[in-house]
Image 1: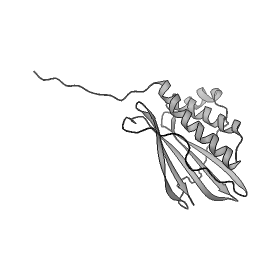
Image 2: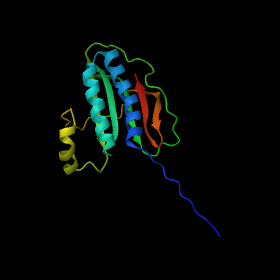
Image 3: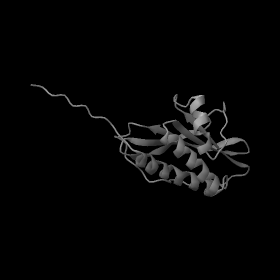
Image 4: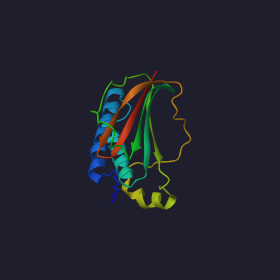
Length: 164
């Protein structure tokens, strides 16, 4: 007699909330250290990230600091729904600098499930009026400078960092 077992990675809404709390802490630290956003603006971005993540629509969030139009630092949070092997880190790390002509940009990437009907259905739950962009998020002018992982059960976000 033989027996087969299948293990599946699972996570709950609470797991998503735990991970997004870490991302939110990073966004607030970035806002505070650069002066590029208010804490409220960072909270609004984190809120929308959580709403989209809970609905299964978020693929990534990419944050870039510009000084007079030139990339200085960037961070990308990639969603991982099979994050069982990730070790969760504390938020933070190196503080982002205050620069002349500071501008912070955040771009969200979406899963294929985020159809026009889904966008319309969730629009009322979002705080930011998101609009399409074709902005380059490759950070090719920056060098990779590490990262960290945020995970709870099998839900996580892998943070990748770039700096000048």
